Each structure stands twice: as structure tokens, then as C-alpha cells.
Length: 372
Picture 1 (cartoon, rainbow, N blue to C red):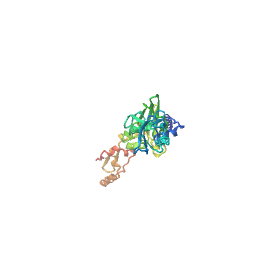
Picture 2: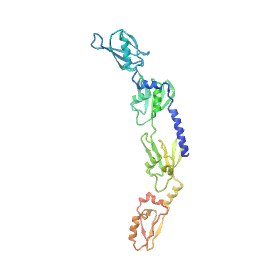
Picture 3: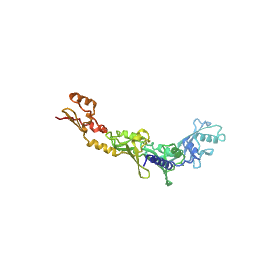
Picture 4: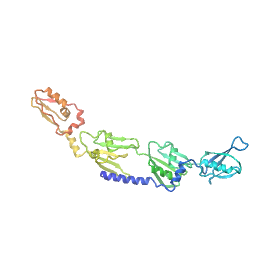
């Protein structure tokens, strides 16, 4: 597969994944849901309110009444009967109760409302969260975001992908990417969670990239989730390319969502110069720098070719690949000439150039043998 084909396929895969991961939000009802879930708390069925009436004639302390909001959104109070308070902010509830008592019951009264017990829905939160289990959510918090916060927040292993399974619709599964604004919007626009719904925070794939072949340090490279590495960065982290040969190609192997492995041929010279894109690697990618005919020939010469050179006097110098570093060192050649002042030492040379790059040579002591 060519690099251009891979980039086009990657974009297509991303669009498909995004469309299946981010369900379309109900835009007609979205603003109302945002205000309902992100605004002040609003009372509803099952809530227990503490109603405090103060400033009553003949009473030093105020009267306190506990009232539960019924399924119709009303509370029942002495002397006034039912008062509608459903889906109202607590300040609005205070005004409603005050209006119910004035002026029919009292000429003046101050009302203070306290939420002492909120009706909750219990949902199961599991996966990459700090404290998994059944999480109680108040009626205005019945969404994925509050569910994860109630579970102690996500861990460093979380990928940002959240899966919702509703207990009353077991065949339906909803996936959201909460690292993107569209995912957060879709989460807030969804129908409220219900008792028994299951929220799974998916863990991220280990962010490991495997780099091998003609590099100085073939190994898995493991990074924190979210860190992005490019081809050139991964090669640099592998100690760079071997310098006893000249690799010019690499192969990127990526496991695709359909289960197949895509193999993309990269021209390292073009990537280095910017003629081709320095693409970003994904977790699980394999970046392999293979042998080519050119590198095979270079390696063979490094291992098998020996040189012999002579001087015009009685001394002959025999040397092989192990002595190349010595022979091509200007400082050492100068010292040799000084020791052989009566000789006319020929200039030493390396007709294959790349042999001088062999790192192994640097670890082997130079040797010089003189003959009669």
C-alpha cells in the first residue's frame, strides 16, 4: 500500500468511526437539557424538602415542615394544601409557598426551602474509573458525565470512549468519545439514565510502538496515553538508523479495525526532507526498517572485504577492515609519517566510503604489521 492510499484509508476509517461512535444528538431538545442538567437544582418527584416558616405572629422560632414531592410534582402543607413545586428551582419553590400562605393564612411570612433528601437513580459504572460500582445520581444529574464523576473520575488508563447499555433496551449500545466536544454534547442531550443502566469507561490500548530492523535499539517504545509520536520521532527514540549501512526505506504495519494488517512503504529520505508527510503513529504500530539490496551489499563488504597497501621503503603495511579507523585518521597518519621519515608513505584511502561508518570498527584496536 502506498503512503497516499494509506492516508486516504485512515481518513475514511476515522469518519466511519466518528459517525458510529458519536450518535446524533436531538438538537430540538438540546438547549433545554443543557439548562436542566447544568443549571441550578430543580425539585422533582421523590425529593424531601424542609419548609421553614419564620416571622410568624407570637412565635420566636420558625415552624419547620418536612414535605415529600409526590409523583405529580406537588407538596402538601398545613393550612394551604397542595402546592405545585415540580421542576422548580428552590428559590422559586420558596416564592410558591409564600404566595400560598399570604394573605389567606398569614399577613406576612418568610419562607426558606432546604433540600434534605434528593431522589436518586442508581447506575452501574465500571471500567477505567477510580471507584467503580453502583452510583446514585440526583434527578438533574442522570447523565454519563455525572456518573463518571460519582465514580471518582476516570483513571490515567481511560481512553475517553464510554459505552452505555440501558437495562430496558439491552440490544442497544451507545458509544461516545468524551474527549471531543461533540461527544460531550451528545452525552448531555441523551435521555436521562435510569436505574440499572450500565456505563463502561473503556481503557485505552497500551500506547506501545514497536520499532525494529536497521536501527540501533530495536525495542518496544511505551508512552503515556495521549502522547503522539511520528515516524521520525520513533526512529530517533530507537537510537537512529544504523550508520554502517544506509537504510532508505521503512515499512509501517498497522492493524486495521476490520482485522487486517496494512503495510505501508515509507521512503525515509523523502520523509526526512519533508517531501512526504511525517505521519503520526498509532498505538500498536510496527515500524520496521528492512534490509534492501543496497544495505545487504554494504553489510557484506563490511564483513568480508580486506585491503592491502604498501610503502616504497623496506616496510610494508598490511591492514584489513579492523584498521580502517586508524589509517583514515589524519592525526595518526601524521604520527606514522614522522616515525618513518625516510619513507614515502602512500596516501591511504577508503574506496567504499561507507566502511568508515562501521561502529564495530571503533571498538576494535587498530593493528599495524611491518615486514622485512
